[in-house]
Image 1 (spheres, rainbow, N blue to C red):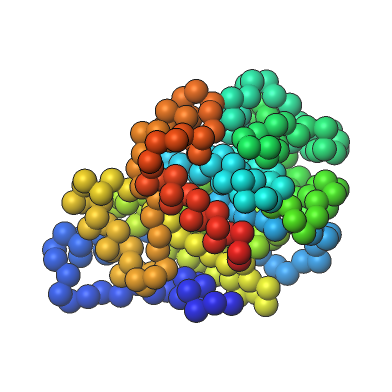
Image 2 (cartoon, rainbow, N blue to C red; image 1 turned 45 degrees about the horizontal axis):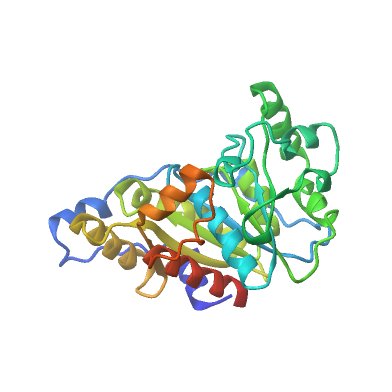
Length: 297
């Protein structure tokens, strides 16, 4: 495990006596309680999945995970990887990012019917493949979550049946917070991308995410962890101040940013590839940089 991962897996919050009162206020932002010991993941023997698995995670919602998942699918595919973007979120929003119909069949209902996933694959950007969660009602969601709590191998088994090779990459979009879908994904993760915004809510949730990931980062084959502040507005002094607080918590080199870019939002609105634009874009450059790091990890 790298030094950055070790720093992230431990409680690195420090109180600098020279901080301004504004920054000190955010250092004191309360966080949610950590999951109890009974909820912590236990080592399990998983079916073989030869592909490299990248998990997008966040404690709070609205940080742009699904948008980033779609962009990473395109960017990594352009680097020569065979990419599958997998949605593990019952909100079923990923189809919007790829311009797919709302009623696109997904893994939720298929799993409840004990059906394989290979027939659910949809075409994505730049030749990548997409597996959406699909439409489910509340009862189906409750039934599936109950099943997943009893079967920690669920995701690993389905991935092993997709026939993925070592040249394949799987990008997993998980729901916000501490939930069974995230833990299923973390059991098979090679890399974890923690997505945050430059705001108090993301900062307040940072330590909770650290504690949630700590058991996985302590394993002998620990996933690499990347922390990104998404949609950074460099014209906002407040946002820049928040980035500095994040760096104080994590270390100067443990945080990276993806800049705010209206072209990304416009691509989402039309279900188009956000990396297709020929216009200069800091956000696209940031995403390409993240793709290169994930590809070489």
